[in-house]
Image (tube, rainbow, N blue to C red; front, side, top):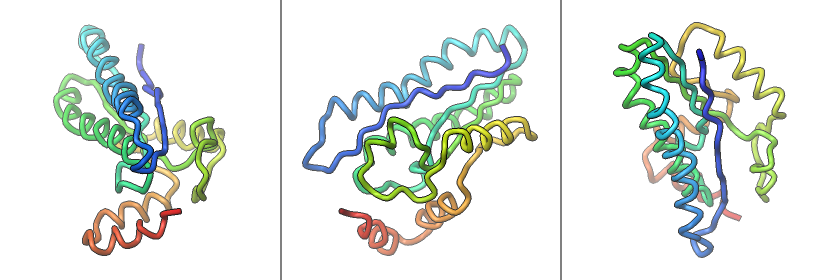
Length: 172
């Protein structure tokens, strides 16, 4: 076994007055802890084999929290932080860890959204982006689409007074 791709994901968009703690728990349990459980099982196998590659499907929402997506963004951010934390240790064991931070892809999860999704991608286009980058020289993060990733990274660099005034405009 060379590569494991952790693509499990749960998403619920919620306004603060619609919060359901079970949804928060479910997103944390699957989006974050599910990846930890899978990797915990795989590490001994990869070590015995002498190599391995694990790819975690995260989200561009890890760059900056957006309205109505707090539970999802938090669980995916935890996943990214986990991957960053374990990458140096595992790379020393010849086990590569990668994350994919992608934008909106037409799936049953994004079909739930009732807001504009900038640069919404077909699954085939997203798969091509992933495939092409996985087969490129090893890099920790694969991110796309470019404009949306750039915008969200820029938001993260701004002072909160500015970035939060920008995201406030996304309220419906």
